[in-house]
Structures are given as structure tokens and as C-alpha cells.
Amino acid sequence: MSNRIHVLDHPLIQHKLTIARDRDIGTKKFREVIHELSLLMGYEATKHFSLEECEIDTPLGRGKTFRLAGKKVAVVAVLRAGLGMVDGILELIPNAKVGHVGMYRDPDTLQARRYFCQLPDDINHRETIVLDPMLATGGSAIATLGLLKERGAGALSLICVVAAPEGIHRIVEEFDDVDIYTAAIDESLDSHGLIMPGLGDVGDRLFGTVSPTWQGND
Ligand code: PRP
Image (tube, rainbow, N blue to C red):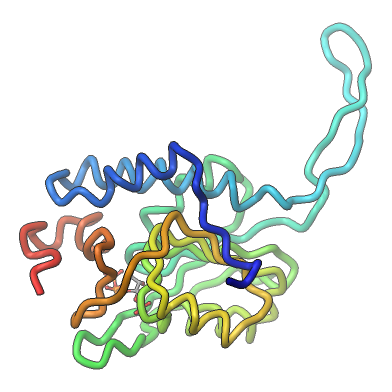
């Protein structure tokens, strides 16, 4: 497996993923747990950020310490489901700028179609983190990452709560410089392109647009 794929095995992440997978939790709880997962995964996905030494006056004296020294950050939410991850990342990186890319996956062909794009003007000067809870066929992520590369985005990473092997392989084939952070690589995709066992359709579960009892019935 490429060393750009990071399966985050922190116990809190794994425990919260189990809660998110549970079909019996409601919209409020699901939203909360996706938020918590985003925060924990964001913490892991920013471990490589660079630091510089600096000095600070504490209440008791002057001391050497560290502060962030790398590029500024942009987060890009893939609509709709990526919206559920934005606030968790912004709790960690409050000054990050936020872009939105709307991707609609055709239910018959599973092809991703872009219907919206608004990105920070200076995205080419920022380390960019793409947020999308599900990496299924990889079509939505590849289209989003390709668009960001066209706009000059350099250091790119993707945080997805759950990934399917198909999506991982496609991204690795297409881009050799994108880090993928996921809590789990699941078994496969079902005939609707949903990750199995996965966590259902995250967009619908976050926004309550389809009854959870529908989820996963193939
Ligand atoms: C889902 C999911 C990803 C995409 C993953 O979005 O949130 O964006 O599918 O599938 P892929 O890897 O095969 O492209 P969906 O199109 O259902 O839109 P939504 O977020 O608005 O529900």
C-alpha cells in the first residue's frame, strides 16, 4: 500500500466510526459523531505541519517555544456530505479559508458531475485539505482534486471517514502526491456505489433527506 495512505487507528476514531456506522442512530447523533471524527482525523492529518522556534513572554518569564511555520491552510468541502466535516477542522485551524465544490453522483452511471465551485482566490498558496466522508468509486474525489490542481493547489490531502478499495486505487493511480487519511478501508461497493459495510449515504444521513431504513437495502 502506498505510504500516502494513512489508516487512522486511534482508538477514539475507531470507536466513533463504529457509532457512525450504526443504522439506529438519528440525524442529530450522526451529525455530532461526524463532527467529532473530523476533529480527531484533522488532528492526525496535520501531524506533518512544520514548526518554527520562537520566544514568548509567559506570566513568569521569557521562554523558547514553537509556532506553526508552514503554508496557510484551505479546506475544501465536497458537497453535500463534506459540509458535515468543515466545523470540526475549523475548530483546529480557525484561520483556514473554506472552499466548496458541489459534486453530484449520477445514480445510474455513478459518474461525478460538478454543479458548484467556489474556492479561495489564493488556494495556490495554501496547503489544501479536501473533506468528503465517503471515498467510493473515487470519481468525486478525483474530479475535485483535479480541479484543485488546475487552480494551482500544491500540497493536497483528502480526509474521508471511510474508503472503498476501488476509490483508493483510482486516486493512487491518478495522483502520486495526494495524502489520503481514512478511518477505515472497507470491503467493497454495492450496486448503488455505496461502501460496504460503510455507513450508508452520509449526505442523506447528515441532512435527514432519506429515511435511514432505506440505507443499505440493496
Ligand atoms: C457521495 C459522497 C461522496 C461521493 C463518493 O456523495 O458524499 O461525495 O458520493 O462517491 P464516489 O467516490 O463514487 O464519487 P453524493 O453524490 O451521494 O452526494 P451528496 O453528498 O450530496 O449526498
